[in-house]
Image (cartoon, rainbow, N blue to C red; front, side, top):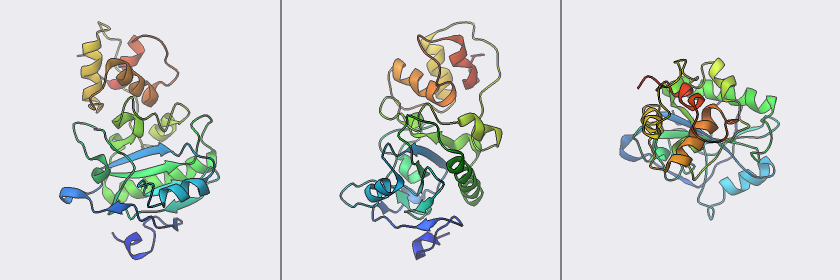
Length: 230
């Protein structure tokens, strides 16, 4: 590792655009998660400017533009400032545990084919370099429910799952009860352990597995969690 730290990108084909907004990973941690975001900004250059601005105090390891351009701003071995407060699978300090990928998108439209193709290639490289499993690929909304909503309802998680680049939904039968307690327990077992209220938790699970879901808790909300046999 350390190619980017020496001024060369870790991922072949990436443009090295260093950001000053990074530090060492804490407590000897190495990347064990990938966190996906959208920029909510107009264009890749605007996002690059912000992610490399010392006054903004935010960054990510990678940015992928709508037309497939790929930039690396922080070496994978270092801690980028992309996740903020949150938790996944009982673990906090997600910045020290993850590699952050920003996708140029306002959150209001689908992600382009060139962008998704580059993302998939990038993820394969990261997952191989750091031995990260598909189950450890999450959205910002997964680890910060109620606070963050990216990569949003337009992101094609199912496409990643079909290629083994993200966890797919469970296949168990309908739950015997629509208990909020059962749903929270199933969600926690699936990794959604950040403290939050029932509505924000339901929204986070739906953003990840069934963004078209509306209304009160339904049997279908349990199915992707694999926790309906609790």
